[in-house]
Image (cartoon, rainbow, N blue to C red; front, side, top):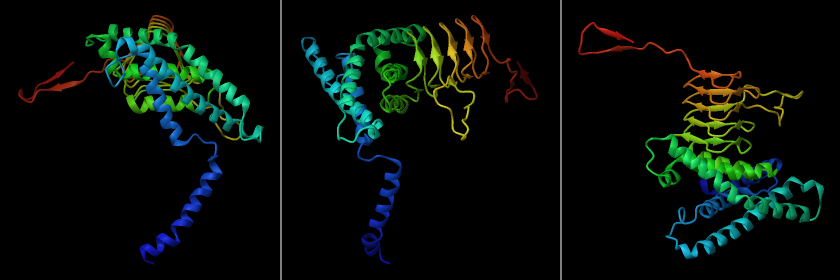
Length: 313
């Protein structure tokens, strides 16, 4: 069979097969799809520009125009987000109604967007504490503007604080898309369900994982490669993971967690003002003011310029 003949005769059959598989697993009519995902990315960009007027703008902003520009961005983003939330709600309640539209979905979407954006001044104040924590915690930082524009921690935490509010409002799909976008941009993976206090700083950032049911107090600092994860996944009678249970640790105020540390389990509590050293594996609670670290190794250092002599530390 020649290529042209195969393209004409076989490709339609393959396309039909793929479409049937897809229909068995997804509601194509009601899915937000990749277009909705990309729209959420744009909404986040608009929210960033509104939260930091004149800083994230692509073009220089005149102070006299800031209120008008911010208002316009919030209005557009609010309407776009409302439409996506309504579609998600309609999809989740699809079997409960037969009509093509859901008044309750629309009303809840409206209320959700208003609740979220009403919290923006509070969110902005909290993000400022995160920026200040980064400035105080990094001796290499020159200014808070440098931190805002270049530190991955601030990008990830800013997105998280928006996604977390939607998560608390029981919005599905959208908060996770937001958090995974932050993960894609920064290498920092924070589930939108995680509860994080003020003045939070992730130094360097890459490889950090913070699970859904994790709680983090105020003034906590963690370094790259830290995992705040689940110890195990309890299964139901069918062998599926049980949803909605506490699986991740709680971190007290003023804790510091150094690079590569792994803290696991829903019953694990890290007391306030504790310091957890690099590369530890911790699955049980520690009291306040604890110092947890591995025993110091004794590496051997060889100097090739001095024959037959090894230095042991």
